[in-house]
Amino acid sequence: MFRGGRQAVTLAVCGLAVAACGGAPGEAKGEKGVRDAVTAFARALVDDDPKAACDQLTDNAKRNAMATFHADTCEKAMERLAASLHDSTRKQAEDVPIAQVKIDGGNASVVFATKFIGEQDFDLKRVDGRWLLDDID
Image 1: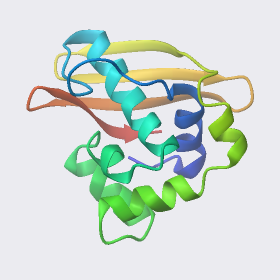
Image 2 (image 1 turned 60 degrees about the horizontal axis):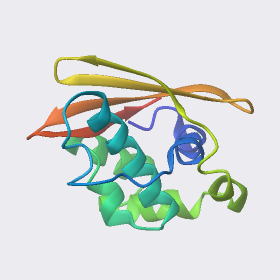
Image 3 (image 1 turned 120 degrees about the vertical axis):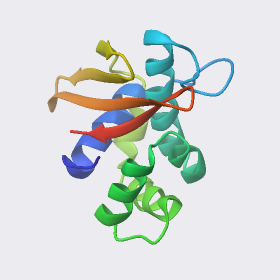
Image 4 (image 1 turned 90 degrees about the horizontal axis):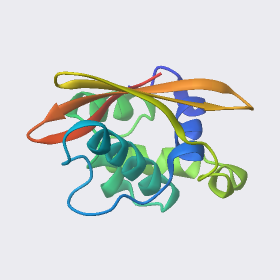
């Protein structure tokens, strides 16, 4: 999940922090559900809400985050990730739109771009009726 490290997650927060509407994030089928899941994750990081951020991750992504941030819980990992975000990242959180969503059955990928760092992507999986983030490049 965190192959690209903090830089990729910083970009995610920078580009995708818009509050999702209605129901649990990621419940909607298709592109809307994918977008909602990604935006909910980014919003949770910006809002310093580690539980909400973890709620948007697959078990695999949680394990990877815990390993990356040397944490014994997902919430601790998300706290450390959120603490690593610069104020400028938080201020720019709504500036970069999702450029592309691809869905293939129960898998999806989201591509977004910034003029400062370039293109990044998330991989998601449909788990128990919700889209959850599974990997960040």
